[in-house]
Length: 229
Image: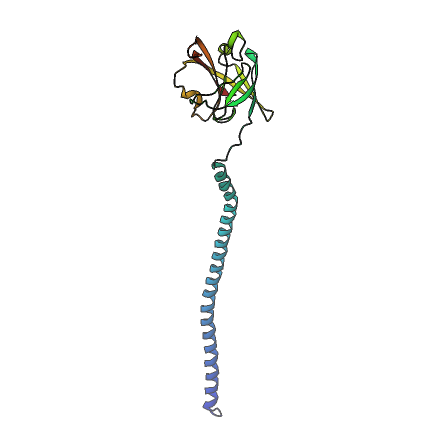
């Protein structure tokens, strides 16, 4: 065209080309930035979701753990405190109120017995009255010269009668008569001294039957089996 150089036309084309290049570059940039932004947003949302789940799980554990620990502690068997030492035996239904002494075995391996007619003896190699197992107390029947003895009327006890042990802690422990049995003096009565049911028992022994002058003892043993109330 007259008065117009190609240089001018070339200048406008260059300007247009540059503008188009910028627009294309912008579009490409946007095409890159927008997906990246979406990915970032999605990643951030996923992070928040995971974080909340972790926190919720931690909170749940913080509540549950004490229960688990508590259950574990309860399941562990704790040593049980010992019952007090017996001081007196009381059997109201037959008017017994006797002091308790502590005895073990004689030289020949038998359970020792009180030296006087009015006392009773707790077998101190076994459990104390009130503890798990069978505590055993012995006393006399039919003392010399017809003197009264502590267990002269023990045979009168019946199931359901109550027996009490007062201990050195000032506590009276009640036992209920379950059974009254008679054994020959030579019987092996392991059930008098041993129990495996986990309960607390008090078993009372005395002599009964005919007197043997040669052996200086009676022919039978009367046993009262009781259970802690």
